[in-house]
Length: 251
Image (cartoon, rainbow, N blue to C red; front, side, top):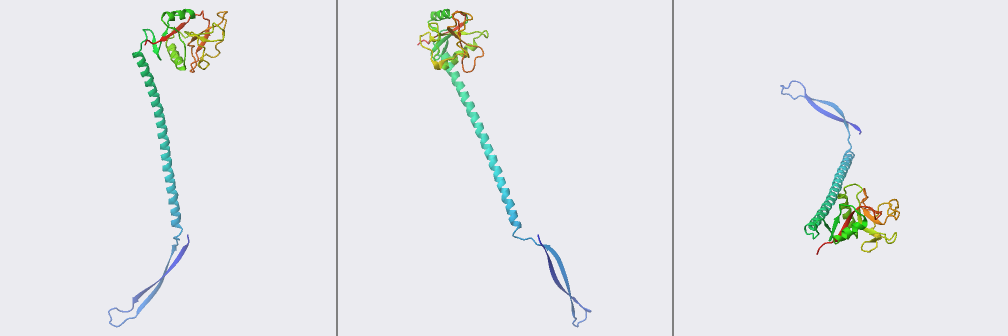
């Protein structure tokens, strides 16, 4: 900023002689010069710079506020989605529990049989061959279980896991290829649905180590089975296993 020197000419008057005399007196004029320097501030520049700084500050504040609001919105959305997911899980659990309670309360299954999906299931606690197990099921007006859906497989697998006395406990189901090797049939003579196969990894293998005739019957409940429900294993029909019987609920 430029500095400018300002000169002021000051005039003062001083009376001469005795002020008590009535005669006019001649005044003495004294002149003196007073100067000082002043910094010149151009009025057009300083306000403009101030305005620019003010504008930038306002923009930063606005941007900060928007960022905070956006972050708050994202957090709120995440919390809402999480709560909705938890709510759906809780509702599904309540529905399943209500369904099971209804089935148990309104069940027409006999004592010792467990209801599910309009059927009654019996899980034996003793071991026997596949043929002997089927005979036992028929004596109770049922047969070895026929698995018709993924949901039924899930139900049976969950039950089997809770009924194991030993890790290697397995349960016969009503599936066999004893008539024709590789042609798997249920006890009701229906063929195995390709979309409803739950073979454990590497099964069936028709191993002849225990029986030269191979393995023509199927058991379920392989320990540490994968979460995709694939727990079926072929086994010699003469092997002793537990079993699962099935029959319709009473009308």
